[in-house]
Image (cartoon, rainbow, N blue to C red):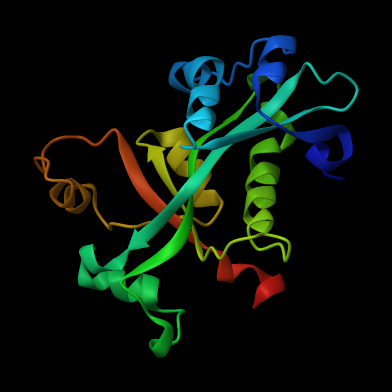
Length: 199
């Protein structure tokens, strides 16, 4: 049984949803602030599109929400060992300097629904959404700038995301930062070709 597919409906995270919904609290101040105040601005400026699952029986309750936008993995600027890893599943003749990707800019599950396996269901939904035959664009990877905190890093790792840079100092160097400076986020990726249905 899937909680999201059986008990919820999928909607755009728009102004009307914000006006009728109760406060969406995923237990992280930065995410709460984004969905309350910035999601609509991002959408209006075509910088990101937000979506939500709301309860079927009460569509004022936002169970989870996420924001996506277009992105790419630029393999020509990452270390050779990681470049080989990203290129590994792509036939040599099709290898490029950058690959189309979708960025998960924000993702949160309401704290009242954390024990329902919603996070895993939501990630599965996003993955399969971008390989659906009706999708209008090609997308090989999903990327995320995960908060550099144990809970989100563990969440993405459990969902088979890998670090684009093998170490934090390597990523810091790529970003032009001091290698001693702790990063606020870590860049991670998932290869959609891992999904059984398309391989």
